[in-house]
Length: 148
Image 1 (cartoon, helix red, strand yellow):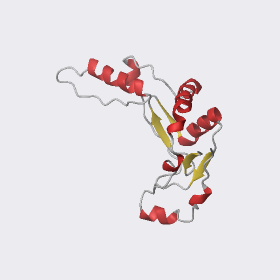
Image 2 (cartoon, one colour):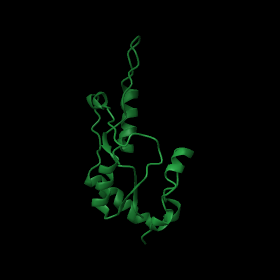
Image 3 (cartoon, rainbow, N blue to C red):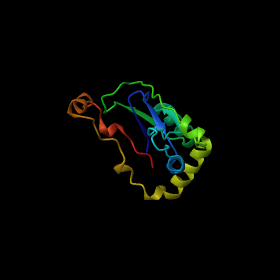
Image 4 (cartoon, rainbow, N blue to C red):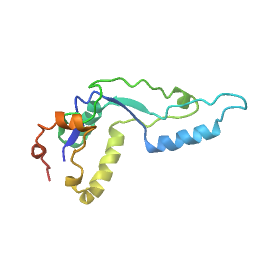
């Protein structure tokens, strides 16, 4: 099954490993504000990356094709996501980032359970709204091929 990237893939997204999410909750619980202090908002994020960069990392690790399809969402083709995890890191978070070792782990799980996957259920078919669906109407769904 090809990997679908909508638009240019220039949208920046935040990533965090589930283990780090649990660690962030633990850190927050163990570091409450003192009486009378304001509550601080911390970002639960390990890193930010552009969608196309994550797709390239996946493709390089797995050999899967990357298909660029019209973006069903009405959003900027390129954006920056300005978030920081400095507060959590200063309290002990050592984030797990998207690297080859993490993808090796994910690939092992995929290989183990790929027989359970029904590729016809995961093909892209959503649009953000009616106007965007009309703009993408010329996309031929049969052009998306499933490799066995």
